[in-house]
Length: 306
Image (cartoon, rainbow, N blue to C red):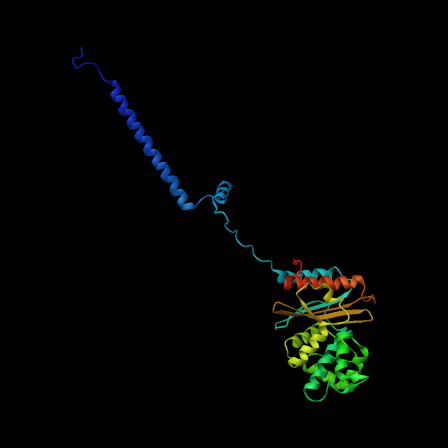
């Protein structure tokens, strides 16, 4: 007989459930703590899911990281070599130099070439130099006109008659001496130059190392308005000033120029020799492609090479 009245099993069962709930709650807290600690130590996993989530949570209008600029100048070397390799029918020498100084870059065959009319710049600089030293005058009669006219005609219109008159007036020994004084080995009777010598001449002229400012400006002005713009000038984009001297004789076709834009200036000489095809479309294409690679890389006016 049960004197205490009926048993209460329900009360014991409720206590057991509470104890079980407490155990599960404790286990859950421990598990969550372990997971949080692992994330804190290793960082957010870089899965596609998290990457996608991060992109969705990015603030509107946030700028993407800036791309690295193309290494145009470094790629220019490879681009010039590619052009030369694809035009093996021609002997080609290319030299490029910053007019502010530094070592020039040379490509292809940079030994001596018959300089043709590009050497007229040496004669012009030599005559101006003698004017500045008081030995010559631009106002004296020379041929049917004065010396000033002959200098302009020699450079601006590439007159061979004017060239001969000026060289004879200077005298070959003095012309050789002047060229040597500016680091160029030049014999007017042989008329041979390397592309590097031509580039050096333009580099010194542009930097004002050869002549006073008045004569430098005058000579560069004649070089800017020549009667043949089919070579380097034809491949130069707007905004770039070109002061150049071309030359052509017996299979040799050259152009040498000072290219300037935005405070930057470079001297470029492209000398070529081929089987007497002169200014053929193929020859012009080579010169234009080389010029485009150079100006595109240095001034950004065309496709970037590389």
